[in-house]
Length: 268
Ligand code: ADE
Image (cartoon, rainbow, N blue to C red; front, side, top):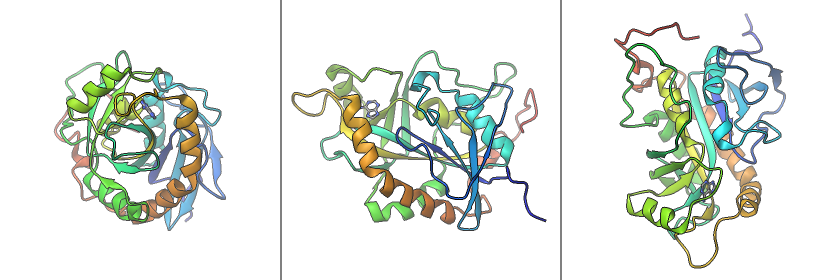
C-alpha cells in the first residue's frame, strides 16, 4: 500500500533564502494545538525517503526570528511522521577564519534569546537532557554530505533574540565565551525537537562576519540575504544528499529523550 501523501520521515526546516526544496512535491495545510506552522508543508520522496519541507520564516518571509511559530512547526512535522530533522540556517561568523560561504555543522549552542515559548511542557515534570543538543547520527550524515562544501565539523552557535544584529561588544563577548557562529533561530527549535524525541541536526551557512570580528563594518541584512542566495544551490545539493544518507532505523539517543518521563499529553 502506498503511504498517505502527507507521510514523511525526514523534515527539513528551511532558513532565510531557502523557501522551497523539493521537486514534484504535494502541499499540505497542517494544524496543531499551537496554531498553524509557518507555512504549508511540502512532501516528496528523495533517495527513497519521504521528506517534508517547511520554510521556517514562511515562503514570503512573513515571520521574523522572534515570531516564528516554533512549537507549531515541530509539532506539525512530527504529526506527519517526521522523526529526523535537518535544519539549515544563516549565521554570522564569530571567528575571522569563518568567512562568508563557509558551512558549519555545530555541536553546541548557547541560548541568548528571551521571551520565546521554549517548551511544550508547561505542566508536569518534564526535563529533557540537552547536554548535546544535536543528533550525533544526523551530524555524521550531514558532515558526510557536506564534505563537498568542506564544512567545518563542530562549533558553538550563539542564538540571539534579534531581530537586530549584535553590537561589537556583544559580538566580541560571544567569541570570548566560546561562540563560533551566531544566529537568531537555532533556539528554541533544537530544544523543541528534543522535547518531541526528534533527531535534530543544524547546518549553518556563514553569511557574514559578525560585528566584533573585523574592523569597521557592521552586519547588514542585505549581505546576509545576498550571500545566502549565492549559496542556495550548494546548500540544496548537500541537503538532498544528506536526507538519503540518514539511516532509516534510529540508533542514536534521541528517540529515548522522554524515556521514563510521565508526559501530560500524548505526542502526535
Ligand atoms: N544571521 C546571519 N548572520 C547573523 C549575524 N551576524 N547575527 C545574527 N544572526 C545572523
